[in-house]
Length: 185
Image (cartoon, rainbow, N blue to C red; front, side, top):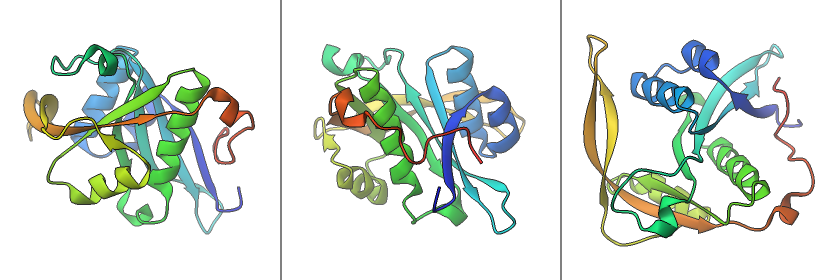
């Protein structure tokens, strides 16, 4: 890769080793344990030629369980846990993670993808809209997430999310191998 970025599938051991945020770690491990989808990790080559963890995204392929969603969106894969490590933000890595997730879904013949975003997170909303995601409806829905307490315990929390959707191109659009996919650096 000319820019030193590599995106690869990851597993539970990768999460335990590299994901520092406790809510992300808990959620990713829960999704992996229940085999709900695919986890992608991004790495960037450092000055010494080593690989540095730079971010992640989870592709939930299992039907989602939010009761407010219609049958059409209930079957749509969801993009979850998009996170780019602070020092790697604002350089296109989040865009590359989303594009790789879309490529995987299109190859799997999924016609669309959806995601939820905090209604107050205007930066994330602008980011997703720049990637051609459109708002499913104007009102947010109640979703659930996880909060990890200081003592390590976990509790379910409710949060409002705006739902965005995007129609995906057919798999023929992705006949060639993506430049950022591969075994990693």
